[in-house]
Image: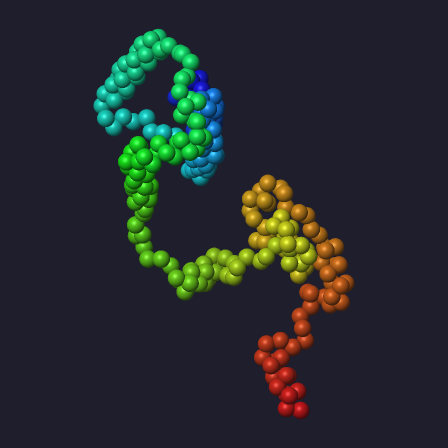
Length: 260
């Protein structure tokens, strides 16, 4: 655990530091198990290692690990001061460890006589109830403060559906961008997989129907004219041919038939 804790200070990648922190937390849970504290052992594994540390990893993956830190010192003399404080801390730790003696733990059987969970709950809600509630209030205050600091004021009004539609029309007029929603995958290919492209009426795959990430990875399924030919055989019509009546003429023809 000490080696992993020291590794957190010297590794250069944030992901490696998070993994070493997991080793420290799991080692701490083992110490709880050795000290006959099964409840703290389970809490350390489930809450801290399984939840909080995974949250750290998710944040690192979202923010990115390739960002370089700024080496410009905003406060003059902070680097020599950090070295002095660090050396003083090392001296204090060395002196404390050299005078440390290990003995047999006593009082564990008496403390856990009624059960470890029951004894821990009795201490938390009797002798240490004020400290427990103060810690809870501190954590809630820290969570609210983090949300306030992370909140960003909106500088521009939120776009409505009408604004988004107007932007699509404007983009279509300026650059010819696709006006409507993207075609769903597998329309003509008879498949709903995200890596199966839709087929245009001529049998060629529609590029906009598959994510660019899948296309860049080369995992997009291949389709050919045989797929559209099979669909044509099943439907009994040629999708490339236009119907005889369309638009206004169709409406006129239907009205004439109704009058007849």
